[in-house]
Image (cartoon, rainbow, N blue to C red; front, side, top):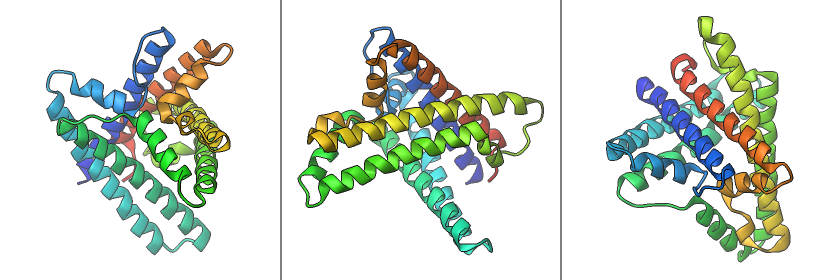
Length: 251
């Protein structure tokens, strides 16, 4: 299980690297969906794609289960209640993210397809029609923005190095790619959260278009081409860090 869970980080890294390259193509005026669905669709189109997709599903599902075990471990640890709650919440959040990625791999491996941007907009529309839906959307937007700041904070302070065993001579390289990667992912998450808030404020669910929409929103800003290129390169760095974590991560 540990080996399979480590392999999950390899697929997480591969997905981020592909998202980064797709975002660079958008910057050059080419089409593409710069999110998990677009990255996994790219894997599906390659020779041996179905095998890789099922392998990605198994590895990411194992990683999600491993994170659930971390929730149980954190709840039984002898640390103070506040730290215990923080550790459990962080592990639970990661378990949800990895489980969703495993589900996306399974959808494509089964011959289906998925448009993450459309799914985000549809889900936002459903929430808007529910009682207190706008309030839930605002809370979700704030949570995603908070997650963005958290990623950026971990990158700048390099606290992510606490998740790694000492990688020897490669430690400096891992430190730098992790710093850049975490900061870039923090920026993208913050933009996605802002788009959710805009959708709630304008009652327009199409404004909430997920990661792809967030990256394209960056590209549409003044000097957006440079900003998008920088963030895309940062996502590639985050992917490289995730692959390194498969080898050096603490399990």
